[in-house]
Amino acid sequence: MRSPRLLRPAPARLVAAALLLAALAGGAAAADISGRDGYGRARRLHMRDKVVEMFYHAYDNYMAYAFPHDELKPLTKSFTDSLSELGNLNLEHLPHDYNGSALTLVESLSSLVVLGNLTEFERGVTWLSENLTFDVDARVNLFECNIRLLGGLISAHILAKDYISQRKDGVYQDQLLHLAENLGSRFLPAFETPTGLPYAWINLKYGVIENETTETSTSGCGSLILEMGALSRLTGDSRYEAAAHRALRKLWSMRSSLNLVGSTLDVLSGKWIEYSSGIGAGVDSFYEYLIKAYILFGSDEYWDMFHSAYLAVQKYFRHGPWYHEADIRTGEATHWQLTSLQAFWPGVQTLLGDVAAANLSHREFYNVWQRFGVLPERYLLDYGILHPTEKYYPLRPEFAESTFYLYQATKDPWYLEVGEAIIGSLNYYTKVEGGFASIRDVSTMKQEDHQHSFFLSETCKYLFLLYDDSFLRKQNYIFTTEGHPLPIRSTWHEKIPASDVPSNWTSVKDAEQPIRVSALSSQVCPETIFRQSFGSTWESACHVPDVFPNHKCRADDDCGIESVSCKRRTCSTAGYCGLWLAVL
Ligand code: DMJ
Image 1 (cartoon, helix red, strand yellow):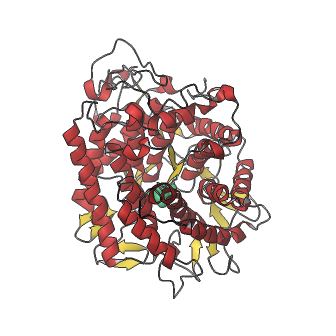
Image 2: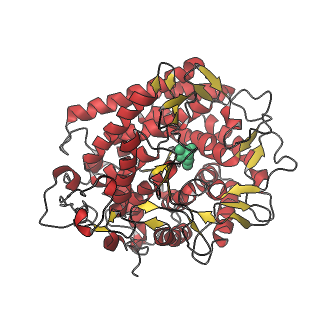
Image 3: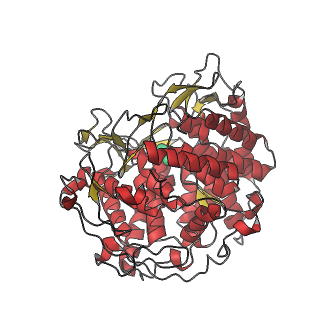
């Protein structure tokens, strides 16, 4: 079997970063408030304004009914101090006198800048600078606290330096960085284990509590490097990056002979607890952070890990456009389930340059979205039904996130139409007078009294950027798993050999790129099949849909033509149309 088609490192190892730059840096590629891609300027502005309205409906209600507590309860117009509940399924050790950390405000700061509201951003920065403290007796989940609070503060600090100081009346004196450093120093005791793998839980005031659980998840200890690495680069204190890096290395050393990692483990022994693993819950951002750490810090070590891990995922978890779970020791499939969290994967594949595979999976997620109106938390692929208990949709961003990445990479206006469907569903099913409510059960659309902070940091941000990416034209960013932008700076990169720097590295920002309309939009067979390299055009337009809904098939004839490669899809043994040869 040939290896999956994957953009190779050295000298192409910066291709991922270059694609990212091409995709996210802007220039004409980013454009398109102009409407030159055939979608229409007025329609684009209309959709952008709808997202702006959604963001402020969520934000204003949070500020009115929940601030400075953590999150809004939109049905009862009240609040929850949820930071201490995140990941704490049994709600143990909840503090009595914790009154929140203004979590949703911290999470909203970078979105306010993306939306261009510097006045409100500055107001938030000032309030947090004067009032936020982490000297509280609260046991919090290290991963959640890292991606939401630490990531939110660091990103906002960098944006404050760039944006507030540009304002005539603006004064910013690194207060958010001081807060971030204070928080980061409270994380460090969690790493004091024989393995260097951090405890999942930490008391912000007292450190690791007695008899703390030693079980954690792979994403829990493998998705800290962006925030802690950035904190070290900003403060000059290497302890944060060193701790996160050591944990990541240890985790990788525990991989199976198939280059797969489990989903839960013991931090004292460094042994796997759960050998069944996939790309969703418990593991997801581990993969995401390997490639993003490579892009942010330029270290080959991250690329090498990501490259091996990606090949293993494609080999053992992928089944056509779907991803199932497997035992990491044998590669045998364990669970055939689509989960809402997996929908980030096409975004990662797009960053990598594996756009055809990303497009294929994204379409399957969209089919499920269309079937239910939103993405259910878990859907049983082998039975084609909802999981009996995990039927909820908590306003998750992953599908919007991948839609944004794919649009940036392809400029195919079809993705803007997908965005319309997402926005339509969110407004129809989840908007209430007091904000946006999660869905408890997608089969009844019964609502739940919770507006998660990631709705503001991610869902609204990615939807906004889908229609207006002007924020990305000023600077190259990588987004953390919580949607907080971190700038890509050459000073944060390890030394890159000149031969590895793509020739368009600096010019990518201003490069004029032709408008690309692909298959899904125009449905006309092309003369040229899929000519893709940086700066050149795609002339693919050949989409022929499959005969049956949901890509089910009995024979190859039931399958249509794949949109990006223009190859005929074939019917798999499991009865789904797919582009097996093209991605194998
Ligand atoms: C967010 O907190 C992050 O995206 C995380 O990586 C996964 N879960 C939520 C959103 O669904």
